[in-house]
Image (cartoon, rainbow, N blue to C red; front, side):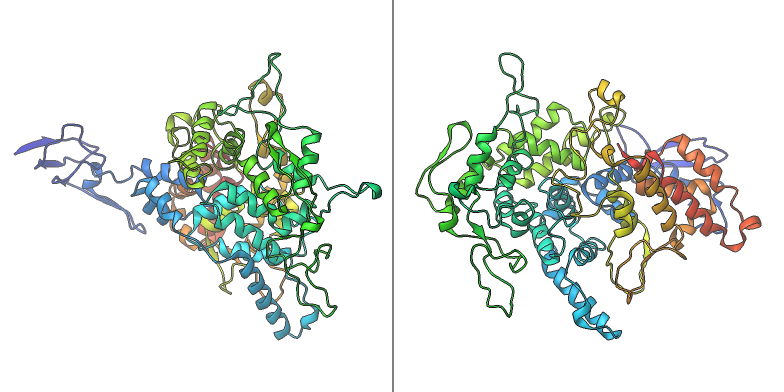
Length: 601
């Protein structure tokens, strides 16, 4: 038997080896080793103690935990510490595979159900059912939040939101009154998040909410004598924003150049006109019950349309004849209108640009603003062909989240690494990673104050171009470094200060709620800091705990010191018995408004 005498601090532990290691001792390599010491520190009011075996058993070495916290910051809307610990114990690919098997209830159905419940509450409190409006966008917001707090399908929901910022519709438009339709559109993104991108494209093209938003609902064929021509709106955006972009791309996302070194456009105005012919003849499949005898037909206003049922084709209103699309592809004359649409979507889906186009946008949504060409190329390759399948979202998601550029610590200090986390993601983190004091058991939230403050809410973009552009360059320093900063487009003197004010409100739960509704029958939901007060006895212990949740071990020493200096003076002598509560509030406030939290590295 071997014996090792190790002097550490003031203790003299004696270690008896029953197993040989060829690499190193410690950091969990302690099987069969008993550690004893002459003393063991225990502090009052703390459950933890400085046990002798902790010198070699890996306790306190949080590298894997912090790596997992960062991984889940890319793949979810935030998780509590126990969940992070559970994921840290398994390969990330195993967690992703398990997430592929999870789903949640229909957002459209839940929107209707919440509206019914809210209306019943309104009536029970003396209101008239006819005076309760909806279901409209606010009820969709209630449903979105209800499904995204306490749920298990974390990756699916994160991908759905990412897709919603590519395949954009918005309640901040002419379709805002149609809550069930908004929820049903979101179901396409949620339910097909792990499916095939071609199916997402086709379902989006046929959804009445997209038809209403980009005006190919009731889009008629040409009547030249009346100066009526097919609407070109959706035809343009399905190319520019949903599939191929403006210029020809290589697999790594770089531009294909002509002989003069110029970019090559993917389409022109004539191509838009030809695609516009394809998306004609679509109208309502079903209508809502009404006393006016209105039945399904082409031309029925979207107000009467059943907006959770795909549009149907009225061939007599569909543009006849052949359609000359991109790169010499021709849809032949004489087909049904629906076959024309299927062919056009398939044609776009198979364009060489789609892989790098979607790869870059999803990487920007989940991981970083400036992926390397090699990263884009690897994800594009997964899109182009994984086991003989093109457009497999599962393969794309794994390629993004498991790539060495997303996972390797060597990238963290690279100036091209990282992204500004958009405000609503930071908002979701707070509600998912901190305890909630929810008396009603309902997680409904309209989020309107936050929307006014930052301009963000699910499906709340001000235009089809999303909240911000993928190629936005914030300033000359970014331009000189050839870097993009998409989210900085909505980070300005107004929204940045407004976010700080929102955080200030959340940290005073006796006055402000973190979740609110427009239904006066429900109290708002506030943050609950009780569990964090335990750690607040020592400022650095509290900050380290918050670092694991919100900054993934990357909280800078400068920021940590600033928070410690603000928290330490808060004591019982000047704040009374509630001093721990004030310590927690101060630490959370300062961390959530710090650049360390705003930037995901």
